[in-house]
Image (cartoon, rainbow, N blue to C red):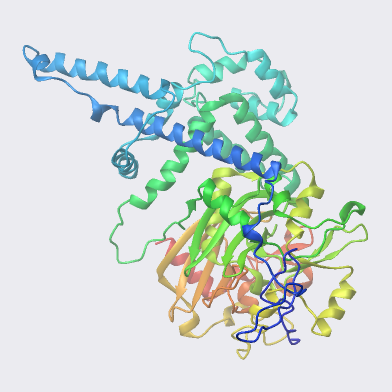
Length: 617
């Protein structure tokens, strides 16, 4: 591996934001007024506010205020029973039935007031009590559905305009297909679906028991539909159906969908209060994250530092700025901590070729570093983007992986949180793929050709913090895990006891979407010596493989670990490229140029056999 070049970044910045070297001033010597390298504090100058940034911040504040109102309405509605008051004078002369009826009537009045009031007020104690009831399972999905039936966009005495609603849906054939499935149509007659089905599915429970009157009942159809087409559709087709599904839900449910999403956020918050079940084996936990306030988000944007090459796509040369990120609504929204380091994340957005990306904001002593993480199609895991090579038109040709795939993979806590964010918020589609590539590439360094990249690598001239902070060699470089250019026989793969996973320490579980295997469950375990995190993947057919092994080491300013581990054939994916599959690939089960490795290889690795045996106990 080539040596790393010295840092090209001094610790100071000049007034115009360009990097420069500050000369030392001898003790007791006053700097001259005309001294050219004098550095001023730009924060104290009365800069004019950026209208676009102000507008975006105002919109974010409005969204936050609206979300708070909706959550308070939910909490007030389900807290009505505890607020009912009956005076001693009223109780006199009442039997138990009459008293119960009086309390019911007054509780309903409080529930109605909770929904109709413009600014419901909720105390901290009421919020905590509500969250505890959620955690204890005392507020069910049926209760949520009943609540959502009471909120609507139109006045209660108004008839919904089903004709206009269907006109919006019919403009998108995919939305029409989804609606036809909900209404019971099939392949032969789905085009016959019309506006008459809307009142049937939105106002009454279906004959088969399905209830699509609220997003709660529609969630089951959503999962069934997307899981059904996932194995048979190309990646771009599947993503198009996801977008159509999101738009259909917004059309069908309007404000009910907004309340449904707020309910989901409250349930997520309540999970922290769920009781821990005492067992002999550690139970997997859900990665924790918080939603940032608009004030904290604006503070991070004000200190943001972007270090990358200009974008040359479309014949234009543009530098990424916080202004561009604000306009794209990719400001920091969520926060989590990994070994004490704060990592803030934006919404997830779509990239070309089915990839997805997210902007990561990482506070450091010299500002908030903005980094780009992207999700791989085949494996479904997230990586940091240090640099890339350009095509002839300036767009991204190749996503570079630094010292190796393992060296740019983000920690498992971040993987899990991104999976949760995607489940709650989905993947945003920006106006054009060119814009999405520009935003993702703006934090990375670019090379005009792969030959240029290789040449700079060979001379040790790689740029960026990654090559200064991440180890150039894996921590197990002295451990002969590869052996030869050909795959080792699966039953011979073994690793020393200390580094191997301790299946009694089930630390985390989450789900990801992959191009090759569809929906995948990911289980995390610590090694016996506590120095590594193992992530095992398992698909719906109970086929398993090792997705990631993370060396627990200090965090870098990219939000990835300093050290990494390379485990060779242990990291064989479910579908391996034909050139690497050797004699073990299943030629009857292929995904493009990749062959399935389950039958002939992965199923015969002792470590994977042990994993499946443990999770099935």
